Length: 422
Image 1 (spheres, rainbow, N blue to C red):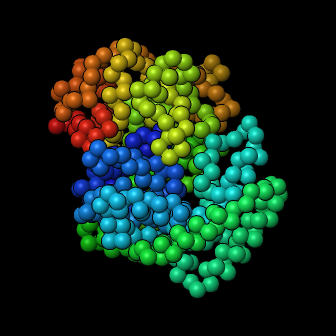
Image 2: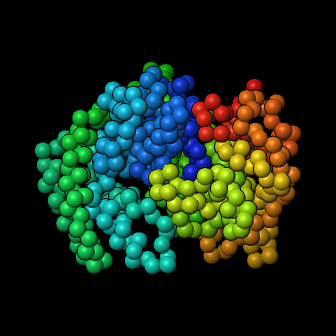
């Protein structure tokens, strides 16, 4: 049995805390896509930790953690992350397993990412320059190196061959930066990676499923950044939706049971690309300030706006979402009036569908207004304690989406999650 937990917006929905909350009920936590920009923030006691590649169940000693074949792995980032989580008591050598088929991010992938982004000028997509896109390009171009290749005595030869190909591309960009130090730390990190549990991931996870173990598949980024269904070309390079679980872990569709979708009570986006409900005014600034909306990995300020129910319903549809987790509901505590986008106007025509090319068609959101609750909610322990105006807001979202909000996060702490049906 596999349950899935993923983001329904443009990422940064607070998935790390939610996976950490659910992890105690699962035997295996598995990342199925994405790279080292995941930035899943969790708290161990009062200490904040940002996980980039290691699954968010790493601090639960009863759980095994798997980095699946759909992930692109940066050994340098993993080495640093390993040191951090170990300092907080996690036993990475015991509890972390890595699929042989996961592709490696090389130093030249990072260089290509930077060179390509610089060449775009004002058309930048907002890449974090971690080498993720170029690594997925090598994967689909059948050129990449994988974690299992580290166990081959000819790995260095294979690396040099791919590096030479990348160098020709970098020459076309006239990229002059010296990446010698990047390569030195890469090969140091590779030695560390060889010490971890490298496994045949699809057999590993299916063995656990056949033994009746409970698996939680953890997504990165958000559904609106999906390579097929997101706001192309301002998207990531992998399948961020529930379908990505199957090819990102090697599990069959019939094993998937629940799909938990995570959304903020409002909406944010980092980097370039369409964002219909963006508020480029004082209200947007207030959301950013109260919500501390800065990238966990990059520190970049997030663009902020009201919740977009058109995009959210689209995300629920393509993921087959069965339950919704609403995060950062407490950020709205001080707003006297709230708004939800319930439709778009495109060239004067109203629609409740996400358009094919959002950037070109420029949908204008049509809003429904709600009174705010103007009272702190971060101390609430049950749904009954929440203000009626907040319940009205949540119930409207339930009705619009046709999917129940089952959990509400009302603060950053592990214990600050309310089960709606309790």
